[in-house]
Structures are given as C-alpha cells and as structure tokens.
Image (cartoon, rainbow, N blue to C red):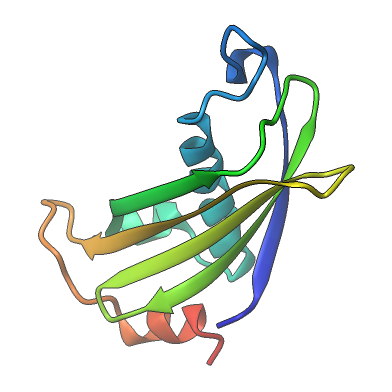
Length: 134
C-alpha cells in the first residue's frame, strides 16, 4: 500500500488569513480533494459509492504545520493509503511548496465506511481489493 498519488493546489487569496498565510483549516479541505483524486485514480467514484449505499465519514484528522504557505504559491500534495480495514481507510498526506519542495504540512485522516444512515459497515471485498491493488 505504498502507491502515492500527487495533486497540485494553487493558493488563492481566499485561502489565506489576514497575514497572507494559508489558514490552517484549509489544509483539511486540500486533504479531502487529494483523497478524492486518490480514489478516482483507482477507478473508485465517491458518487457511485453513495449510490450503492456507502459513504466515507472522517472520524479522525490531524495535521502538523511545519512551515507557512503563502498566497500565490503552489502546493504539491502527496497522498497514500496508510491503512485499510474492512470498515475504514486511513490516508497520509504530505504537503510541499512545489518550487522549493519544503514540507509545509503533514497529516492524516481516518475515514469510516458507513451506510447512508451513518451506521458503520463493512466495505465490499472488491472495493477493499481495489484499494489494496490486489
């Protein structure tokens, strides 16, 4: 499970605080985009999962801010699947400023698979296998 997926995020004025630095909560939004791209790169559509009765709910998220990112910079987010169980996924993220490659943020998010009513459920084995590249 070491395959990494990378996306770029350009920092706009709306992403920053009054000092021109990315507001910390926006990294959680960037992580969400990166996870969606990661799943899509494996042929997994979040919309199709919802239509089939499975949604993914963040149950834990963490981030460690290492350096400021500023308006006008472009960030590169590397995402990998750190752990898969029958009922959860844990993604690890590393955010770097694209030009300098300095690490800006490191973080992770654990998502539980639930039915549409929010009850934890087991993921289909085909989905688990696709996530694990089997």
